[in-house]
Length: 94
Image 1: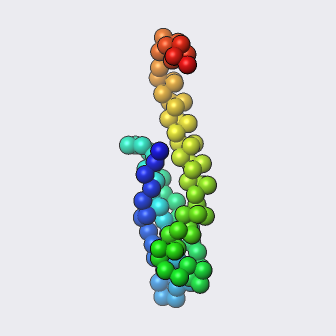
Image 2 (image 1 turned 120 degrees about the horizontal axis):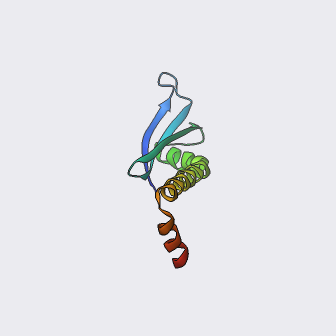
């Protein structure tokens, strides 16, 4: 599937924090990736690990939809580059 890394965890704003901002880098393939972030109030996430978990839960559906969209786009590009003979072979295998 995709590799998901925590790219940002910080209290925000720095001078008077009210929330944790958590960002994720999502690597879909060698040449496809994206960044997504969201926040949770400090009083709901008592530490950075809880904030990561809560923000991931908030972003999970959006992350999965974006991964699917990027994967489908890659398949469309692949099909456009295949010859008719290649497509016929694929249909025989199915």
